Amino acid sequence: MKVKLRLLPQEGLRLEGEDPPSVLDAPGEMFRCEQPVRYELNLMETAPNRFLARGRLSTVVRARCVRTLEWFDLPVEIEDFLGETEARGDEVDLTPLIREDILLALPNHPVSPGAPPWAARPPDGAGSGGGLWDQLDQLNIETKGPAFRRGRK
Image 1 (cartoon, rainbow, N blue to C red):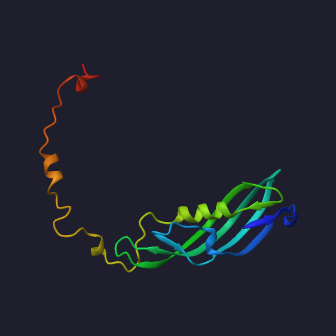
Image 2 (image 1 turned 180 degrees about the vertical axis):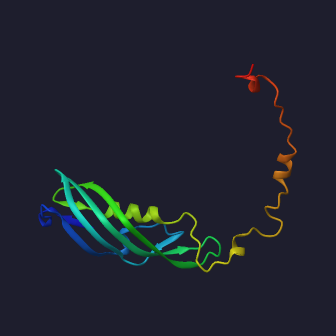
Image 3 (image 1 turned 45 degrees about the horizontal axis):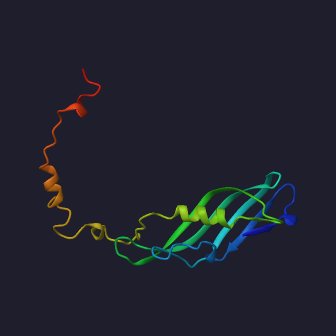
């Protein structure tokens, strides 16, 4: 979202509206942005050529569940958005700040609210302590020698 400086009064400006989903440019493997980004922001100049935006952001992102691999709607609400930026030419561009906050709010491992808990368990026999872990448990580590004597008297 870009704001022309000539539209910005000295006391600041209240901005309400929505931007197209394309402003997010989310990674397509786990997330798809198909809904608009809604904003309610206050924009003010804090220093010459420096601007502060604070307010609320919201959207709905399509996310792929890590348990079921099904797509589901994931609401994203940022109640306390705060960003500072510089003017470029005759406008202030808030798009990078909005994109960053929303993308950082997305979970690393999205789980659908309807995903059954058993979907996250490994298949039978996997992760049961066999294989490599049994071999590591058998490892006999010598705790004597110069590396273990440092600092001891």
